[in-house]
Length: 261
Image 1 (cartoon, rainbow, N blue to C red):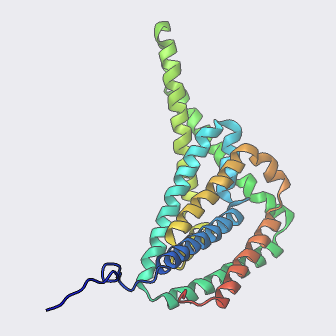
Image 2: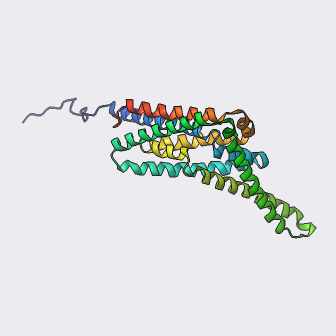
Image 3: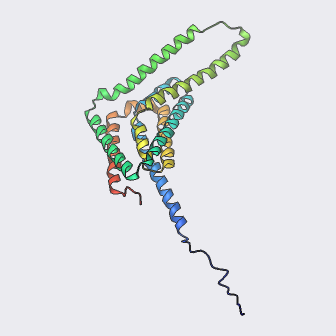
């Protein structure tokens, strides 16, 4: 029996496309980027001159900006994750249905925002800021009354510890107040619904990061220069711009394949 050794016998490899993994990774990166850009842009457009923006802006005028920002972004980050979870849960439904339902919702909100924007008067534009300012003033007045009732005389030796404790307690109260007011104001808001819609059709990681990034940008802008922006930015113009952005997302959705192939 004769046998021979072939150099090609050791060099045989499975028939695998060397570019398949590269294509898959590239597709994932594109989907992530699409989700990130879509959610970040929608959040920025929706949140500028919104109620949560005014809450952060007004609180930052009276309290620590860092404490207000921390409380606000904590609430908005939790809300973003919850919204993405709600949207992701909808993926059990065939994608083609969620795709067209989300497109219809983008059309609905876009038209609604345009109608609201064109009907808005200068008084309406300033009304929300003044309403939030009034509500926060009432909350601060109630808190001040409670503090006055709880004042007790303390020994002079304990004054420094008391002041330090009061400072920490005050910061904690600011964080809790910013968190609570922001969370309640954001629940059921346009930006939350938009995040849910996007999470049902885009990459959930991209939508999550984009949403949190957008909220961080708006909250940071609010605590740094909220009063100036509230006086200079037209809520009417922002509302109309938001409606246009929502309609652009709806129209582009009709162009692409709903199956994402």
